[in-house]
Length: 282
Ligand SMILES: NC(=O)c1ccc[n+]([C@@H]2O[C@H](COP(=O)([O-])OP(=O)(O)OC[C@H]3O[C@@H](n4cnc5c(N)ncnc54)[C@H](OP(=O)(O)O)[C@@H]3O)[C@@H](O)[C@H]2O)c1
Image (cartoon, rainbow, N blue to C red; front, side, top):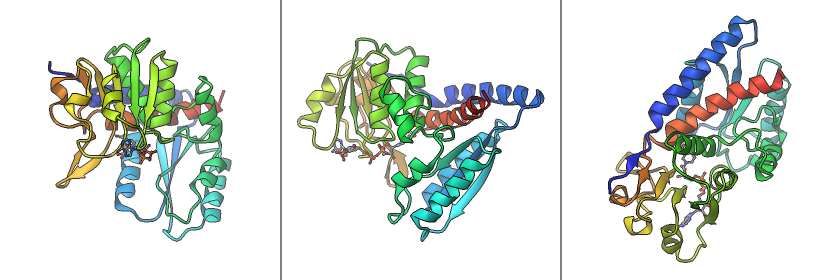
């Protein structure tokens, strides 16, 4: 079997085109331009690249951005104060706080300070709670992107067995909740799961968000399963995923990595920013 490649890039492009048209119409009708404020604490080069990419993706569809930076020595109080100012600004539709932050900053305190309405990644306890109740308002970008990818390729979910490897608040838990909402029967695995291979082999839909190079072997995959490779790691300077070579011969669908989940995550950030602007004007 050679898996159908779940290509994120063309779907992301169609999402950008749709949002661009909506932004143009909204602004032409006299509405305010949606605006994303990004917050970067410290000088991590990878985070700097991620933030710039997010700003560029917004600007290409007509969403304006502002760049807010604090030094690597910033205190929790300083980051909280900045987020408070961004909450209060009427020009700002949505706020992205780039993670991870330096260790001395209490990330939970910062997330809880954010206005739930402006929380573009759905991390605030209000948004996480709504998702857990099956009534999401803002869906975290990567899980939302995965669900959109599965929907566009018409991968069946209702009644199917889904296994999610990884239980982070950013990826594992929210994608498991969204799969549950789509009526899959969901198992969440993590570093203490015993006989992970056997659990993975039961999956009709396998989502792996670990970050360990080529961790998921072909014989861990049920023939015909949909495999979503979220993991990002580096091998000889190249970006690679959690899924080992040969899985494409067993799976029915497989995300390329890069080119699958990453472009969908970035498109969802733009989509969430636009939605935040629409929602707060209702
Ligand atoms: N493509 C994208 O757009 C995108 C977006 C977000 C994240 N990512 C990537 O996705 C990966 C996961 O991100 P994250 O933020 O969820 O990372 P994270 O917070 O580090 O979570 C990793 C998860 O993997 C689990 N894990 C670690 N070793 C394991 C093992 N040997 N067997 C089974 N599970 C294991 C951990 O279990 P414990 O909880 O037990 O420690 C944890 O739940 C990373 O590589 C990240 O770079 C990609």
